[in-house]
Length: 438
Image (cartoon, rainbow, N blue to C red; front, side):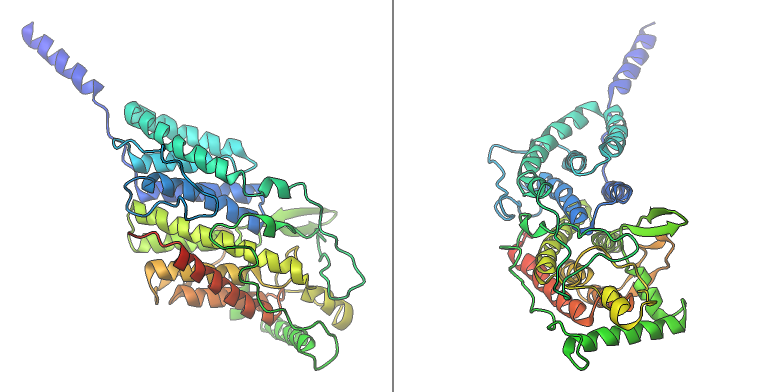
């Protein structure tokens, strides 16, 4: 009988022993991928998507580094972010677990389909709590300290105010001004994005590019030469057929989150990732290839997403300043009414090229983190039916992303050349002014 009591007591002790919760980089990638999935479903524009990526990464990063982290705190380094000194993470906290919780807490505040995030979150919560409710509850309590602070800061970035600002006035007697393009003829999106608080930049206009070539349809003028060069180039690409390298490049970097498709009397959207999402995907590839630990993975995502967000603010500031008409409008009206660009023209002014700016900024930050001549296979577009493309460096990928917009017939050459320079300037500024490694 005595032996039976001892055995029962031992079994009771074992049954009360809680399994530690192990968190890996795979778990963090899963959260980022889930957020991307929800953004595709909700069809967020490229600028808005960049904001949605930035804040959850910042929250996760700050949990890891608010006190005694491997990297410096973001408090005082991002515009308007001042974390209270009273927010101290309990030293017994599973900080990696808390980082995931903070990420989810902020992410659910940024999307339309909040239930998709909360359902996903609750399934994770249930698993973590079942493994070790004490460890989970402490991590959750500490995570929400930081995430609530990040949400309060986030809610003061002027995003809500821009939702009620006037729509963009389209029509004008000025022939150089942007007009809506087929097939959906959508209004210009996010005309007030330059009013969003920047993360690191001093202002939206800090890296204001040189103006585009002066508008002129006179043969021999700089502007007309760019227009006719684009027309001739895209015709040559079309003659080569869909198997040409230029077509492959244009399609790979299309990254249009809302491609309008007509079928009979109906129009529907073919959903894809945004330019920012493509570079977030490249960040994931780089962290996986280098076997980056949890802290470096979150650091890389955070710094890259901040650069992407500031790049969009910088680019959109110029787009609605220069307010330049798209090639499709001019070619159809003055050169060839039957011409169509290879890619669907997105609904906002032409100059500068958003993908070029974002690619320039992202490539600089990723190069700073992972080094130059970083060879990688870009698998980002596989879910959308496109093959893998390989690059010898982030900078070469950015160069290709930029020229893809000319191949696609949606940008003049100046927009991609100056856009890439603009983005590189943004990226370099983020590198120089957001030094987080200790």
